[in-house]
Length: 201
Image 1 (spheres, rainbow, N blue to C red):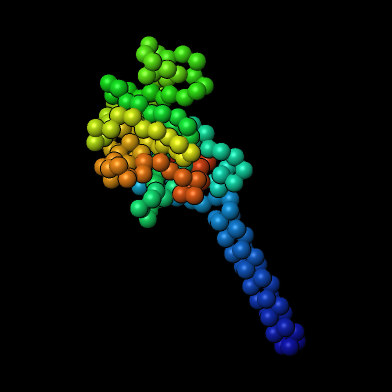
Image 2 (cartoon, rainbow, N blue to C red; image 1 turned 30 degrees about the horizontal axis):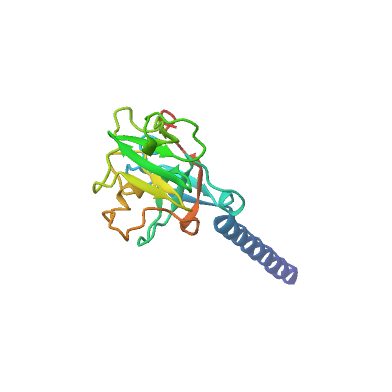
């Protein structure tokens, strides 16, 4: 009987170890290839996300599809070593212009311009309803126009606290400062917020 109990103990222990190892590899696979949890730090994405909100960042979109305008993404910008959360505002091959604290997008798919000028052909004013109603987009370092090539131009929802493409990620938009986010810098797209404050979700 004692021998049978010892054998059962080791078999149960082996089963438990196999189970824990399997769970570990499943969790590791999910975090590396499917989704990763993050905590929003600071107020940069208010009113959409608040400080200490928990979010899940999915990593599937960037493997099979392109990001779209309005996607909220997590990435690590050049010269930085911590993840940022921002909203994609301008897509590759568009031009960004800032006039009178308003934001305009110029591309080849916009049929008419709201501003009748040859320099403003195919431009439209951006609808920034996700920001505070009284928010204004103020150009940084006197730079009022940005060319978006094959990467993404991102901005915070909270226009009063900006360290994004508009400010060249606080690098003062020197000639060599990069204000775009590459696909290689992307961690993923924010898929869901855990335990949100439902009044602001």
